[in-house]
Length: 381
Image 1 (cartoon, one colour):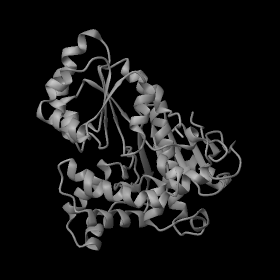
Image 2 (tube, one colour):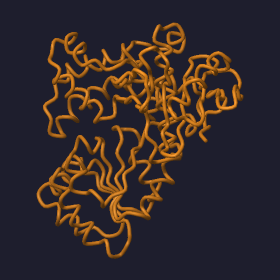
Image 3 (cartoon, one colour):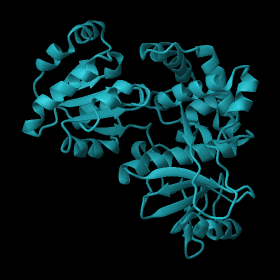
């Protein structure tokens, strides 16, 4: 089953504005399926294929010069020499104002510096996230337990995640030019799962793992670069409050989180002590995925004071700011609404959302409303 992706329209829009588009996202998140759906007439080159990789490694300029029309270049980051050649090929074709390349990659440009340095100003960039319930029509409960990767949703998610993790941590990072300690990265990832949504403390993590500060920092960079974790930064305003300054760290996909925490079923999740943290991370990812398509330049933060006032997620659209508090059950408690309303002015937010699982969606104060995400999985203003 191939689900229609919300990002398809955005990808087509970018292709009308740039001579090349780059789609990045975790391995097996659906980049190839998306590109072929958006550009059904495009030629396709799998750069990971051994023979294709050899040709593009030896003479990328010659190979690119043989292409005509729009071409999808899959897993392009496996051949670093390709990016300088792409810059020349893009510049040579810019006069016809057509999109000639759709470049797919499984690592963030910050991890693969060649992409960001060689193609700066020449590309439209789209990050493809895992599937949301708004795309599949499956239940919130199914997505929450299994995560959003297509193959994890089609079968038993834990059977799929174990070989996936091994491939990413052992093979992919090495292919990108790093020398990863896969065992250390797995231990770090498991520790982050046990602290889902917690404040980042590099020294404490290093002490627990028996390594130094810099090793933990490098490990976090690698895990973030292959889309396994998210560091959510704090939001600051010039107010007289003592604010938390460390980022929060989340395992991005709830299916991966549950695999690392050994949570196999919805019943086990219901009684797990990290149920609330799991739900919070799931909602944050779901909102960010759809927000970036509706408002591509939104920035994402959390807000917390030393006295415990907090907003789990802030959507900063520039001229409009929204503070969000996430509840693992119904989000219709008037006390929670008043607490959120009381900090909106400190944050500079125009409105607040209480997002919960179950209950009704309703206005609780003039500036705060409750959203039951299981009843409105496609909701996003």
